[in-house]
Image (cartoon, rainbow, N blue to C red):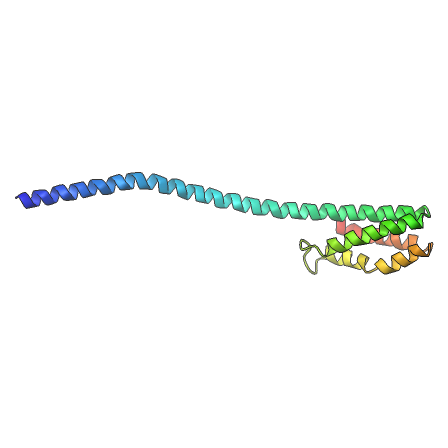
Amino acid sequence: MDSPRRRSVVLAALAGVVVMFLAGYIPGWLQTRRATQASEECARHLAESQAILAKTELDLEVARLRGRLGDVLHEANANNFGLAAQQATAFFNALQAAAASPQLAAGSGRRGILEAILARRDEISADLARADQGVKAKLGEMYVQFRPAVE
């Protein structure tokens, strides 16, 4: 009789230990699981926010570029070809950096517009250096051509 009673006590003690272990383990495990899910959700939101921020920064840079082109056009229309040439150099340098930006998808319409305008760099620079009056119309066309890239 002693043996079955002893076995019962040992099993009861073992069951008690298991119950106490689970009572301490399960709440911590559930809390860790909730924290992990919350962390993953925060990481997802952060990635989305970073993508939105990168797009917004690119949109701002493209809008600034159009403004710089407007400054070049303004100076050319005022027959300040030397100043227009300096501003055009700064504009085309910034345009080149923006067109090479990894945020612009290859083959995107926006990249195509920027590259088409950038392709006219040598032509515009030469016309400004010669103070060619025809450069005003070319700059105006470029300004209009730039519009879809900003929108």
